[in-house]
Image 1 (spheres, rainbow, N blue to C red):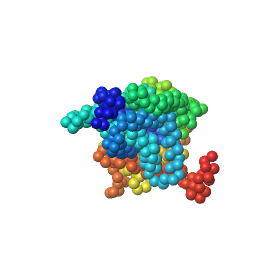
Image 2: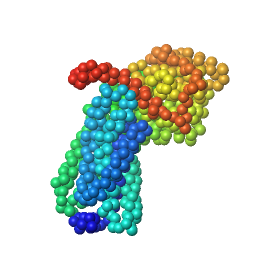
Image 3: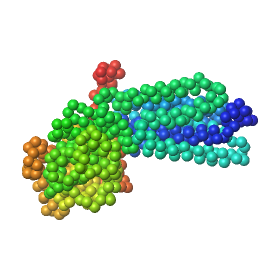
Length: 551
């Protein structure tokens, strides 16, 4: 009787097609919001599996609670107006995420960084998801049980109706998964993606209320919220405090930021403050880890060829071309958009071949060997596990010529038992042998370069030690560049031998490589070091003293 009365009062619900369309767009909006969440959070918290786990977990919590309460509300008061009002609120909320989401993340991070001592990344990402994404997705979780109340005519066809509603939700979810990843985010970005799917969802309750000639003011307010966000969101990007960005955009894999400074152009990917690639407008050394990595060709028996896994915009390739002009350089970069930016903003030489592919998959398909292989695929906590395992480093060694050198950029200095660098170093030592390895910390940075020389037998180990000892002389002989020779003398002084892995060493494998958990510990250490003074001010002087300190 309740359903019949509701259908008479709201003629649009007499058509089950409208109910199925509602379910379809609800499922599509949920998945689009989930994928959008990963891109919204990535510049602030990374795009690691940890962040993905938090996003999926909090969204599942929201949907589960929505299903429970939606069913309870539908049984107590099966008013379709209430259901479509919840959809309207959810759509307006999602539409406002591009406008206010980034500010909320910055505020939450700022408050937590001086109060949370461990697992900052987990806590900050979780709180951000709970505040920004759980409310609208909780409301969307109430849709399926609510629609089931109006779509079911009798118990005889109840299962069929539920099945069709579930199918519509699933099909919508499929489109909400593929469209953002392969179409909207690469084409128009995360902010517009939120608006596209929020607008599609909002159309459903607006059509419902207009057809019923009720809740017109609420519908108008929802449309106004959408329009305001659509107009204002593009006015500021993720890094809304930056004024000199030459480019800000997104690819399938990354948030990308190109900053044009007086003496250099830099690229940041998925972070707002870090530097992943740089080109110096005056040429010469960069002052970054690439300079230390230039020791690799001097340590190798020959310096005729180099492979760069994680080409970026080609900083290391340009350095090799400058100081080793006869060296043949090959690059592999998974993100084709970065390669485009390399040519547009960074002056990457057009004659250096760059393949758009995953580094490990490329190695598996290639039979070529090289004198130098640079592994530059790690970014903060985002370390591809498949490029950190013993199996991967065995592949790298197989692609090195005898006496060749692998250099790995480990970009978070963290030492001691259970650290990410200890695990990576022990893993590489299990493949190359510790005698043929050295590390060098980069001054003024959190990077550490690890050099591993492909040697065999006792004589090979002696040759490796001699090569490390003769670094400066080898550089002078091969390049004749005095500035690089002087810098290599400094690198030589920073080289530290690697100890043989102990019996309890952590060797990362394809089956077990907890790189993100280990990396999170390193991030906690870095945050503790940087935020420690502010935490002490908060403890001793309170919030007033903290505000004065950060002004």
